[in-house]
Length: 128
Image 1 (cartoon, one colour):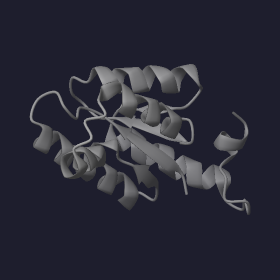
Image 2: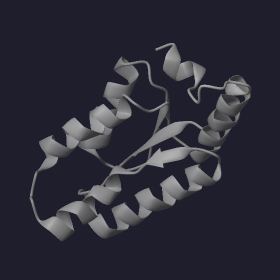
Image 3: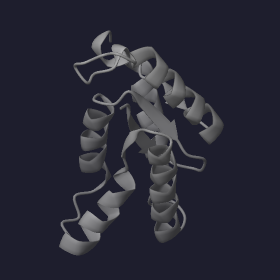
Image 4: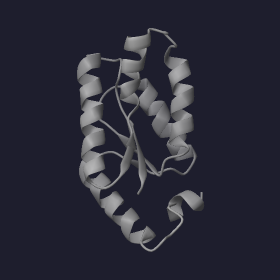
């Protein structure tokens, strides 16, 4: 199963709506047959615990998570962090997908290309 990082606005604009949009995108991708990492959920970490780690702390975590993913899905909307995540993915040969139709096609192709593998890792992950 491919692992997809969901990238997009969190703090710019209405945070609650952005978190909702991120979770909905992650859910739609999961229904296509992929596991997802939804950094939008870090909002609840901050809200519940109030550590106030800040943007740089979360971006360091995010790029480490992206490095473990098979692809990044970039949601629409203004997000300097999302733009940095896309750049990081592209610089490291990780595919970036910008719409759900392409995401669905990419996941279908991933499953087709990795059919029969027994180690649980995608060819894309093992050949980077």
